[in-house]
Image (cartoon, rainbow, N blue to C red):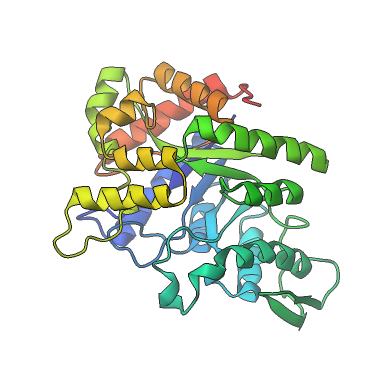
Length: 362
């Protein structure tokens, strides 16, 4: 298994944005010293009550200046919100600044809220994102100036000033549980993954097919399949639960839409769950309907909380059941004090990760 520090970069009451980023760098510096393979962030917009990270490129450059070995990137770039020419330029420059340590996540966007602010149509997001993969390969190809004329992207006779270090391009990720998207990812050598909302028992058959499709496509290595949830490690199970469980049940408040006038918290949670019901994802709907219930999180191992051996066992069991080989831990959540946060990261790197380094879920 491989390990990533994953950050929504949640906003913290009483902390300025600059101080929040400084804390993020301290986390990543420690992860780098401990041998974490990856550092990932999100791209979220216009939600000061939720994430304070709208630029994966700036995240990667800032993190790269403070680390030596970790591979860094967004999980991922919200492709429809970027002009494709600008995005390929940015990716190439960041890869050069990182000395070839960039990982590129590409996502269409799960929330419609930011699209009108950019003057864009949410309905077009998926085909735009998939076509960008072809656009990127043309932009980074041997033929310069490059031309790409597609259904959604068009550039004629452009020469990039900077090419990425990694050829043909930095490694690509596309977090998805959609069967058609997973087929596309396997055919194109794109890593994937999923988050806390997708039950492992439902994930397994979809990612087993993805793994099989990947092998049939002839790629020379195994794919990376990531899984992200909150994690907290402490000296004992009892102490870990006391410090982190209730906070873990508040970690994903940002998943809720902003409250309408007179709307209760319970109504917002029901609205969140109903969105997954509408998509026919009843397992995800159950998780989202209970994601703020600490007892539910603990009973179903949706947050990995405990002593090092306990957390290692929980991750191993979940990876075996849900077929992921990259654990993307969200260590900083809710109002977790920094001393507890840094101790958790240190104990994970020193006592949990070594138990799983040689474990292969598939």
